[in-house]
Length: 86
Image 1 (cartoon, rainbow, N blue to C red):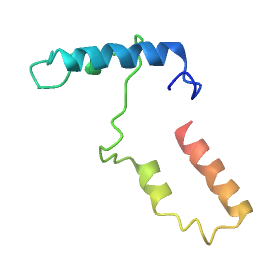
Image 2: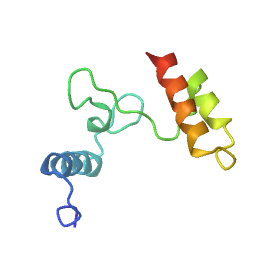
Image 3: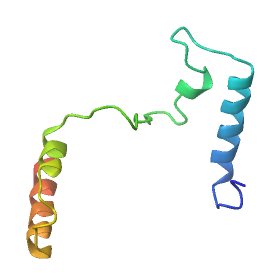
């Protein structure tokens, strides 16, 4: 199914590894599956989809009234954010 959806082979292999780990009930000291917490590449970090991220730029974006912004205002805002982040 995943192959039909066009997922890369590396993702499919990783999912199979994690599934096997879950089926064997191999958990770490925090109760998470051992493989699920590993980094796939040195220096990369998996972000938590459901954690509350608090960063000034993210807060600024969340506070924008995107329905009332014109395309030009939105572009100016993106440029401002880009300048702030370097």
